[in-house]
Length: 253
Image (cartoon, rainbow, N blue to C red; front, side, top):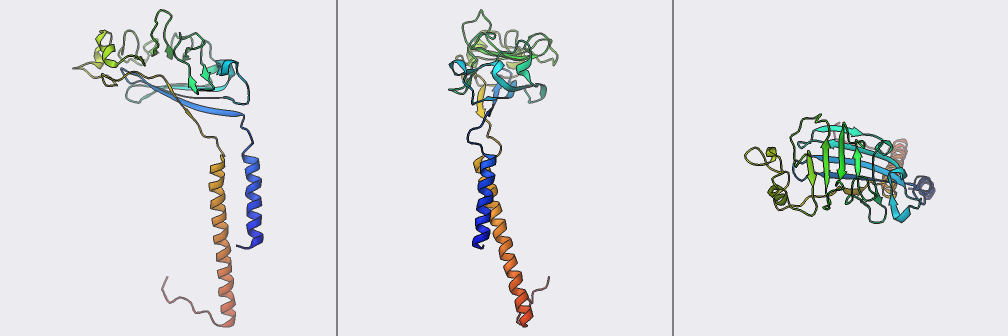
């Protein structure tokens, strides 16, 4: 590759990087997922907020979110429902620790350290929510308030639950696990010695990251170099033809 062409490519990539990768991103996005301890219901979601803002005690509250989408799935992975722009729905409570990068779920569902998403009104849809006021043990539930999807009860009156401090066997011993998830009809989604889990958070890589652009730049450099070599090869063949020196390859095509 000529020095001029190489310099042009580098200048082009540098300009692209300066445009596509700002010094500090404004929006930051995370996804989260949860699987129930008894039935195996799943809750998946994605949310975003402005990372350049400061938040009281480092907690991003419902009203601070730019977006929140929550989807519910049955025990067999069957899609049930998605709540788009859930942060705008009445009754929704979502709190995210911007320092630990964890969703707060240990408190009562309507408190500053609790969660209540999906059907925020908790009347006729699907809700993922943390413990009620009368409970002292942190846990979360999934409820189908109108029994719209017809799943059997997983624990007590709920379609599913998760107690991070208690094993599945402990929950079975209470006598509150639904018959559908006990022998001979079925089994629980987790092993007897496993504990439940809160929703787990994972960062979502930003589009147009430096690594992505460098990969594109590498492709561009390679492609440009190849084209340049092909061009030189063609010119060389043309010169040989003019001089009567070029002999085509004898291999048939």
